[in-house]
Length: 118
Length: 452
Image (cartoon, rainbow over the protein chains, first blue to last red):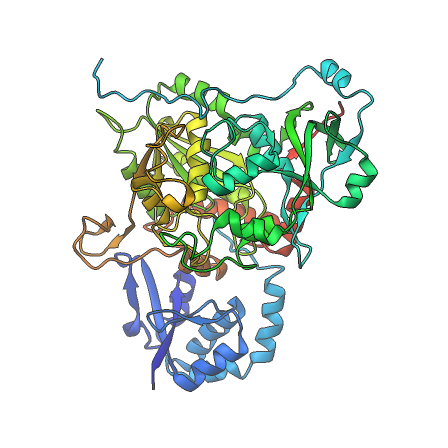
């Protein structure tokens, strides 16, 4: 049985949300420490459900599940903060909202809110 | 003068094709009494989505990007291209280029060889086609296969049979049956829309610009993407080639044409490259972003041949080629372009590289591998020199980051470039091309025309 994962990127805003949750010690770094990320573990059965629910999703050569809707990724981060965890229960909680996420994902092909930057 | 100095090459075919009438009175006389036809986009043979607009080919031909091609090709010329990748005048060329219309339109027009047809664009006279021959595409699917090749016929580089998932194959498969062959002439010069107008350097203008800047040697960077730092390093390091000194200039030439969902908008691509020099990462005195109008055929080695022709016509001395050049999917060997430019591909008519065959090209290939971030070197490192484990920059990884609204770190995307993406994201309500963008773009095109 394989172990998969989903990469959750952390910008300054997301860093502020996980401060004090105990998740800081799980932060991984790329590009000389300039990119911070968390990896959420996904067991085989949940990976299959994700691929079944979201047709754009795929598994890359590292075992990372990619090309998920933005709505999925945003909810995943919300659940990480709420559950203070990177375990499968986070993905299970996201999948409980699958209909809501799919509805949002449909609209994603028409509009995505741009970030506010200086 | 050192014998090692490289001079700017002549255009492909020996002279620049320029078929643009700027005298409106003369143009009016030329079209008096002629039948006219409204240019229509080529629609996907199954879905009806626009996949090509022949106006882009007319622009690129008449302004000399495709020299020595002068118009819509005759049947014998197309057959020779498919067999040997050569025009009837011997010069090498990769693709059939035709003006195709439906049987119904042909019947309604009632034109034939010797007639002059006025081509309207956006409701205004745009160009003329002096018809020399009318011929038919009997089997567009066969034409599409012959254009790109098959694993059996082109075993050196073709890995998978082409099909409807390949956008270039779809263009040829979707052509209308009647071809009107003959020379094009633009009779009403279009105005490029913003922001494309400031990136419009057709071959005569680009050659004059190189001269003005004192650029004897110029290396081209082909793009259809917003630049990340890997691209920037590719440009900077490839430019170290040249002759007795690095290339004087880097020409970024963005292919602007019909878009696919998920691509970055053309506006963000050209301004993103401009942001690289505005930010000083490559100083503007050495860097010139520009455009060419063309609906990409994604033909990897064949596309690279067209790129070599376009950039030699623009006055470049060198052209960088990377992995999966102008490719989509896994139809071709990922190094097919570099194979063409180093060894040739006999099954496409090149027993030697295109620079080493008669009536070939003079532009010099610079075949590059990849740049990635090396945490040990703490810098962007070249795959063939760095001995450490590197962190790859992938376009899809970056796109995922952008879509989530996470600003990529400056080590992988310059903040100035990201700001351009967000600027156009706000404008279109979406960071990438979606269906709305694709449909609107093909309605608005990149040009406007005045009354003649």
